[in-house]
Image (cartoon, rainbow, N blue to C red; front, side, top):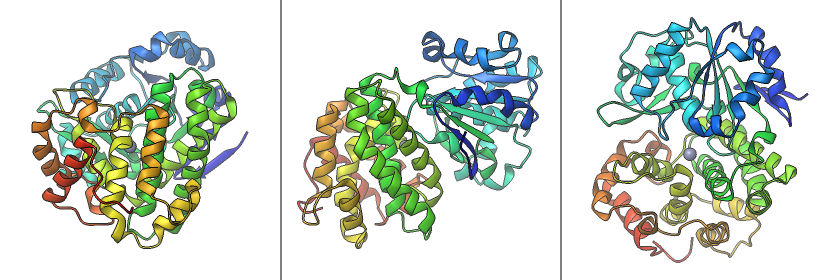
Length: 385
Ligand SMILES: [Zn+2]
């Protein structure tokens, strides 16, 4: 059993969920609320989880997590948490159940409304150590939410807001690559590209944090070496192990700040007209943002070229375009079904996103619009990234 303590305590190995029997008493949780979604339930993962929980058959389970977590779903889960007398949470699934559970852990111990705690509305210092204990079990290898300090939740009025605090980091992350063996190829590719984008964006973020950069580069290298194998050979244990580690490392480096890819994919993911996968959006946007940032990233592009295994003279943006093609990802926002008339509003929202501040090149509304239009049409921003 390898136990790593960095930001939080992480169990990482095949079969790691069996460790929950120890985690719960160690965190003082007697009666957890399990937060999941219907897909997880259908895949039999909740039944599997119950087999390793003390009194598993009686545990309270909330499966109403929407694709993108909403305030109303947080409140519904909170009601169940209170009515069942719960004293902690276990979130199992992709980023959405984990983010939703962070919202429940917050409101279980902090007076509402949820909006009071949104980062952009000055909520960060209002979140205290009283947040209820949360154990996160990722079933995709991508979001890094299991070790992240942020939760993205759409409020009832439609605003998609970030909630950020060190107290929102799950007290324990249980990373069990076995849970990802059945992940379909398209989701493996999309979530894997999210992990890759986390590593690239945090590495390029201008904040000074060499340890985080080292983690980002290690995660990037593991993901590049394994993503295609994980997509084509879903039951390959080594590929799944490495992708889960890459996703974890992406989450461990978040603290350095993301960049323009995420500043754009957050509002795009909030569009009501069309449901867009966060990882797919990042995959499509990454080459264009790399072109936009090129001259503001110094020698870092050479380091990235080295880690992804291409020569110094080669084009980094085109490397990621090629990877997207091999993974079966779309290549433009148009192909994804993004309505063209939403681009101006997205550009405006991107400047207000918390990830925008750590993009290596400061981006204006006009800059974001240029990136969006290029990514919409599939026209490179410049030829030499
Ligand atoms: Zn992401």
